[in-house]
Length: 130
Image 1 (tube, rainbow, N blue to C red):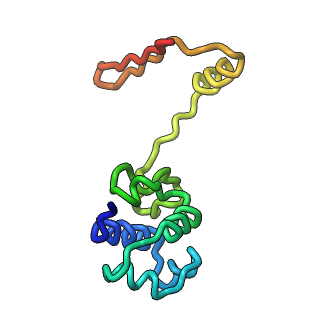
Image 2 (cartoon, rainbow, N blue to C red):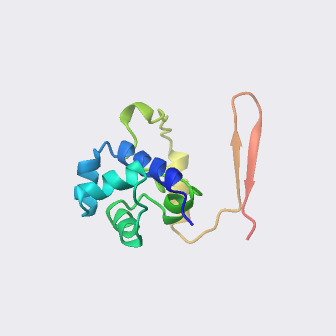
Image 3 (tube, rainbow, N blue to C red):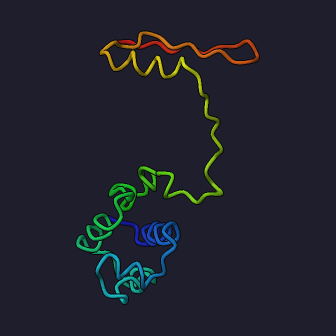
């Protein structure tokens, strides 16, 4: 059975993530605004149809997370979904070794091992165990 209080928190998380009011959320999933109000207040429990409409409108919401809180939200965060101030800065390494490696991968060769050397003298070894 679904925990209505926890479901309400997850529903609010979705609306906050997409920066939508309850009215905008209701419009997007195609339900009456009062339905959202009643679920958020704890008066009503969500129907299966209500849950399916959320999943259809928001592909980043996982069913298991929405119902049980297990898993993650958003399911597959992309750069567009993450506010600019929360995206970590990434360094781009431009060298011919990377492009050569990519072109070699395109020739149906498999990677056996990758070794990453760090500036402090340590290294990390990754092996492909096929």
